[in-house]
Image (cartoon, rainbow, N blue to C red; front, side, top):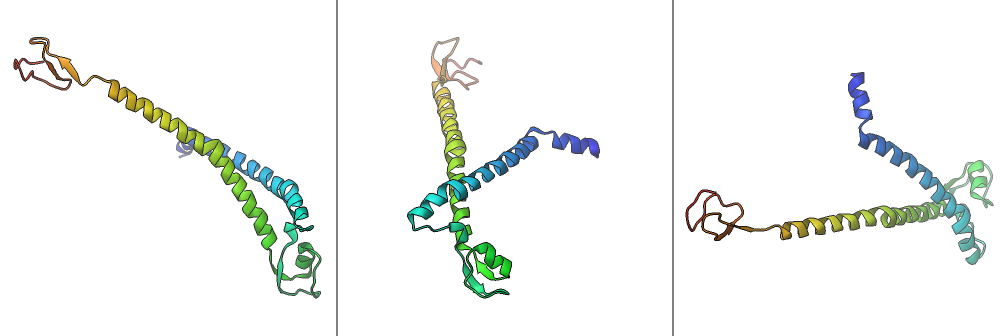
Amino acid sequence: MLKEFKTFIMRGNVVDLAVGIVIGAAFGAIVNSFVSDVLMPPIGLLLGNVDFGNLFVVLKEGATSAPYDSLAAAKAAGAVTINYGVFINALISFLIVAAAIFFFIVRPLNQMAAKQKAKEAAAVSAAPTTKDCPYCATAIPVKAKKCPNCTSGL
């Protein structure tokens, strides 16, 4: 059983998947930092000093009464909140990751597949469809077993 498990784990696609997940998690952390630390502060500044990470709606007040200065203060008070600013940050992070995956992975792979398909189509169309009968020199299909003109076996 251990030998089979080792064989399964050492398959190329399982190891590739594991590497992809680790790199994807690291890339996600980089994108989240980019969105929350680099992209959103200037956007918030342009919109009038809005901190998207602190945009929330209080559904139920906590131990201390509202208003709360920040999301952290609301959570510390035990308030029930809808954190739509955090959602906006996550949505922008997702869009950046999706765009990066599309433009750097999916699109090039699709282009390579299209080129390969075109090469295969050219090779199929370039392949001869007829051959000459060695006995009567008439053009016959490549797959023919007998010549239709001289009835010779090929």
